[in-house]
Amino acid sequence: MTLTVMVAVVAFAALGLLLRLAYAYIDALKKQRDQQARLATAQERARVSREMHDILGHTLAVIVGLADGAAGLTETKPERGAQTLRIIGASGRDALAELRRLLAVIGDDREGQGRSHDVPLDPQPGLANLDALLDRVRAAGPTIALYPHGDLTSLAPGLQLSAYRIIQEALTNTVKYAASDTSLHVSIAADPGIVRITVEDTGPPRTHARRGCGAGTGRGLVGMRERATLYRGEVTAGPNQEGGWTVHALLIPNAPANSVEKRPV
Image 1: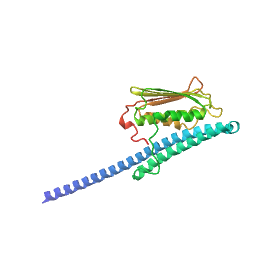
Image 2 (image 1 turned 180 degrees about the vertical axis):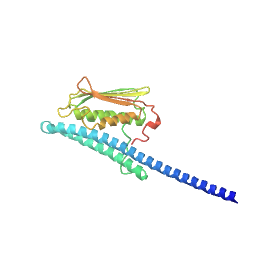
Image 3 (image 1 turned 60 degrees about the vertical axis):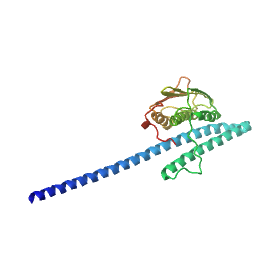
Image 4 (image 1 turned 90 degrees about the vertical axis):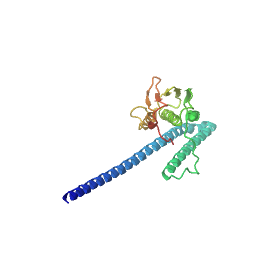
């Protein structure tokens, strides 16, 4: 009888221990799930912030550059002044369209109700859109030469988006910090296993703006490096011998899948 009681006590103790272990395991799973949810939210916010910075930063820089020139043209050359104002309007509308598309995608992700029917969701820009991007920047004053090499349009959409945004940010910095009559050379080459990007301006710097470690917030360079990191690449930037600024970027097309954005907006 005593042996039976002892076995029963041990069995109940073991059962209690197993239950505590089970509850602890369930609690750990819940904490892990909450941590993953918080991490996913943080990653989404970073992604959206990066996209909005690229869209607004570029458009506003171009608009400011155009507006500076239009102020004088409206009196001396009204026809060119009106053309510049039309470009400003078109740039603003393009930015609004991109922001609406971005916000529509965010809303659909959160609500899980499918895409909004009120906002057309065009594909994200790729390398086929470079000419339009360069035309907007040319309108602000710089002379730009584009040197493409290799089959760029066959690159994966996510890689094209990263390359496009890196070039866009480099051009934005030129519009912000270099004189309006600067010359730009944009080179992008798709070689086997690597994509090389160079954006170089000849300066000189604007009298009221200096590029360097202390200029601006540095967010643009951080954003370019983050996009390059998605493809095991790197970005370097600094002054060049022409008195301007040069940005170099390397991207690796066959980067591991887990290092690439799962779903670019």
